[in-house]
Image (cartoon, rainbow, N blue to C red):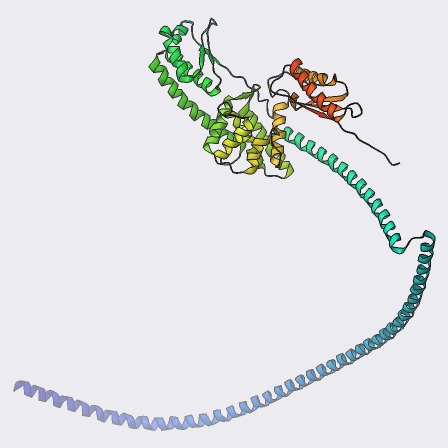
Length: 521
């Protein structure tokens, strides 16, 4: 109950408060209504006044805008009138220009008609002249036929034959002159190329000596090398394939063998045995086998180094092995590997001068004597052997194979690189100092060759070339016939064999020719 009465009392209190507030609001609204009406009247009056002012401003703005548009229209109208006047002036000027061009065209047409008339008259005059010339030519031809008693075809034939003969003689003379000029130019150029190649390479002489002696510390070592009843020396000779000569020469044992690789291997093995001091058959076989393996590796390494030095690209390992063997091969005391490298460099220089493939030329030069590494094992000359080995071991270039087989003129030369190899081979092998021979002996041998040939009747001149490997003999054509020159060639070769001492072989060539020379002055 207490809660109910409390709620009722609260409700009555709220209702009383609300009624009091309503009465107070009504009184306040009446006062506000009176003040709002007064303010509304003032606002209406103010709005009427502002609307009048605004209407006046809008009228002024409209008048200004109408005035501005009128001025803009006036300016545009004036501009349009000016443009129309300018276009009229341009049209009048263009009409004047067209009129002038028309007058000039009319003038040109009149001039062209005049020229055509003149040309027509000249053409008629020329036709008349040509007709007159033809008539005169016909009369002259008839008179010539009467005088020469020749018909037209006969006269034409005679004239053409004479012209052909004169032209043939003139062409022949021109051909001979051009051939002489070409020969002179080619010879000069060839000398320049050879001189340039030799000067640019400028290698030291490649002569080498082969040593086949082994130093020993004392003569007592000779007995140890021989061994009891000679068993050590027999074992060593059997294992190495060389001959060991132990004589009375103090401090030296001589190693002799046809194969330079075997001799060098035996020398190194014997040196090792002497340094080791243990010399008996089993130790000898062990040291020789070890030295042979070392020599094979050394030979291959020398071959690889030679290929790198010559810059010839990839070369088969077997060919590298053969090139390495050339280090221990000499020709007239000239080291063949150094000779091959020199030929390779000379071929490359000459090929570059001629605009050819320098790498291919160097390859031809390096491999040209590769057959000398196996010429004692195979039958035939070293060019043929070298070509067979190169082909067997993967060399496919026709130029290289032809250069190997043909650098001594054994076959017909079909490639320019073979000529370069032959020239470089001659330069390397023929120059003084390349092969252990003093300049005095070199010159004396050439003089002796020339003197032997000069002693035969009918010989005008003799020239020793190719370092004395070839003798060119110039025979007098009036004293010797062709058959007699053949006989003289055989006699000269036989006299050289009987009278002179020389290495290798000498090619004798007798040249007999008849020349007729006339000068037109």
